[in-house]
Length: 161
Image 1 (cartoon, rainbow, N blue to C red):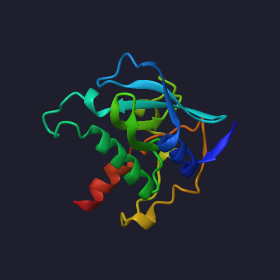
Image 2 (cartoon, helix red, strand yellow):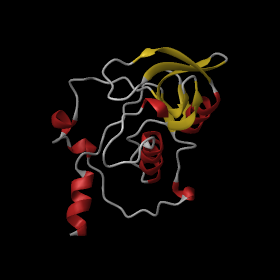
Image 3 (spheres, rainbow, N blue to C red):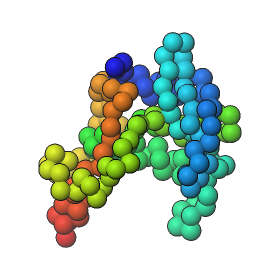
Image 4 (cartoon, rainbow, N blue to C red):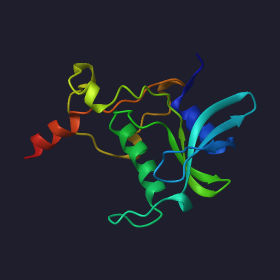
């Protein structure tokens, strides 16, 4: 298995050549399965163009791509590493997010891992400054699985009461 740092993956996603493989059929917004290539280096990714976003009543139209990028940045800054590497850039259908494709097991989801203690992490208060983002040197296997630390949010919410 080839390993790249998250910084190398981000560099490839940001600057590589985007080749559309096809439309992802069950997405609520337009989403394309793509290959991002730079010479012999290639990764699978998902491209979600801004103009393919369906409006939501509680968010300004055309902001999903910024919110997806923000989710990645915050996840990295907090050390959660639960959102795949994501960049905002232009591609065939205009600006949008390009996010590293992560293979998944559809039988494994929140309700099947809820009681798994390996997904529990200690709560810490972290300042979200640019210097806190340590993703540039973290090793990232291209078949990495990202999982939600499902009960972290509940514990933090309880702590704030």
